[in-house]
Image 1 (cartoon, rainbow, N blue to C red):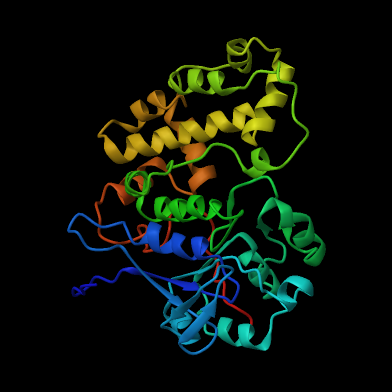
Image 2 (spheres, one colour; image 1 turned 180 degrees about the horizontal axis):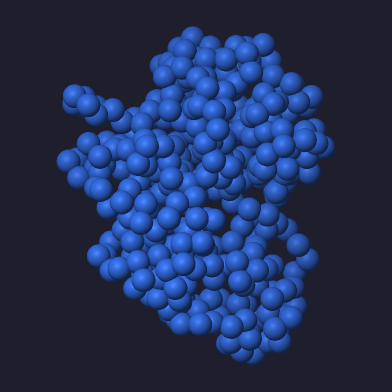
Length: 351
């Protein structure tokens, strides 16, 4: 990767643990390896490290991987990502770090952004970094995670959780959702969408992992809420009432609300707000429309209403968001060099 004076790509260090899933290990490299700025410079640099000196790392497949970096690489990271492992040992069974893993994590600098994919969350929890914070993991392990770490606020229904400087995701493919979200957080919707297109995945999946949890088969006569969602997406600029959406599926409001939450993972009102925020982000990034016009086209009605929704969802005003992401590929994550979304307290690993 070329180096230019005054430009430094955001370094993502992926921690490869024995028993890792090769698919999950490859997700950060695929997603963060794609984004470039207007001058063709990579916005991220991705490297992989082990808890030991460079050498082989066992996988859950019939092959091993040679990892070229030792734990010292964690000290150079702007973001550390911990994929899942099937051999977490005491971390998974007793909720405590091994001496080797604790020594590796001690290299992480305070303020580094931390993220986990699937059961990688157990490492963050065992390090004490998730006490009092929301987190998620694969739905099949959520109950166990909660029992082992009662201070963690486990949510089994979502694909990922962004708690500012610590992010966690559900199982396997949810790691793609998480990494795309971080690119979107750092560089805006347009950059993330381009990565998604090249990766041939949706830029944003509706709902959470509740839709993937095994449940009794529903009555085949019950309708989906897909048509109502498609109808609403074509009319985000208009006032949309819950009863209007229910009518698209010929359901009562009560039945529609229940079915919607079962399928999407959030209420119809929450989903509408999310879609309008995404529409507003797109318009703020890609057009010169006034803030008032963006608010109307996104369905918020007034600039004040949109400001409140963006402040709640992203932590910034519409003007600040546009200034950040229309600035155009300077490689920064926000106006102060950090992401514009979430909270950003300094988070390091207890030493």
